[in-house]
Length: 217
Image 1 (tube, rainbow, N blue to C red):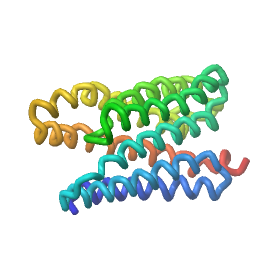
Image 2 (tube, rainbow, N blue to C red):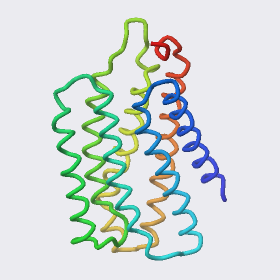
Image 3 (cartoon, helix red, strand yellow):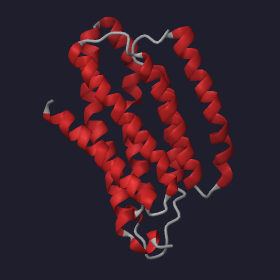
Image 4 (cartoon, rainbow, N blue to C red):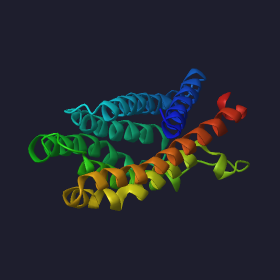
């Protein structure tokens, strides 16, 4: 296992453990984050093994994970944001996105390749949702915004999905031109963004854990 995967898996595991600690402290909304992180770790470890041993027929799991990831991030938003204006559309978006994702998987892509269309749609929706969360954070008078857990989670999501949006839109064209180069570019694009995202999540969780006043409420 190279240095990237060691660092990557360590970050995901650390984030999951910190989120689990917050659940233990009574912050049960972080169960959604725990589920996302555990599912991500399982998928990424399996992907590492599949890529290393060139196992075929595994791509269907990405389509399933895409639906699970969007659902869990939406549920976290619904438990977090106090502004009710976007909550009804977000609730409605979950079954609609699941239906859209399954339609693409079964009738358009047939579970072949990466679900780049689904990821792009997911990213576009989450970018809007977490921009709304970012600008509606409930920050107390004596609290800096950069010490707020949801500031860092929102920033991580905006950086990751904002950074991958254009690339995933072009990925089918690049894959058609040169499949091996497209896959390499996929790694070059997503690897640093993944590290940034999970680092942001960890920073946010640590900020909340250190805020004893908030945890003892």
